[in-house]
Amino acid sequence: SAEEQTLEAEDARRVRQELASLPRPQRDAIALRYSSELTVREIADVIGKSAAATQKLLDRGLTRLKESLDDLA
Image 1: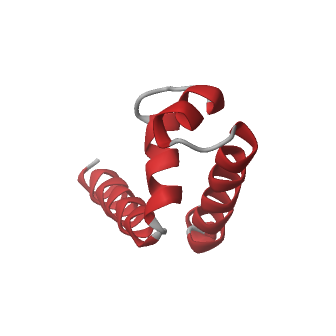
Image 2: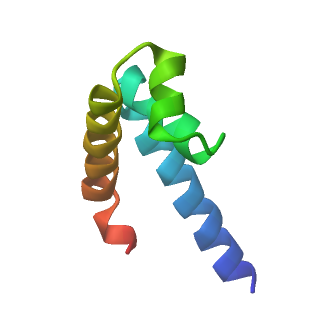
């Protein structure tokens, strides 16, 4: 329905807004993981960090997104 489409568009806008509010390293790591479907090791190579540091970026960024978007679940 039109109402559902409007609500989905608003949710998508909110996700983009919250993603944009993340620190750039977290935002970049998440984008590479989910848009480009790279592995943690591949992302680490691209951004020049260790796999462990890259995993922390992903974990922290996703935790922040989950917390800020909790009301959408």
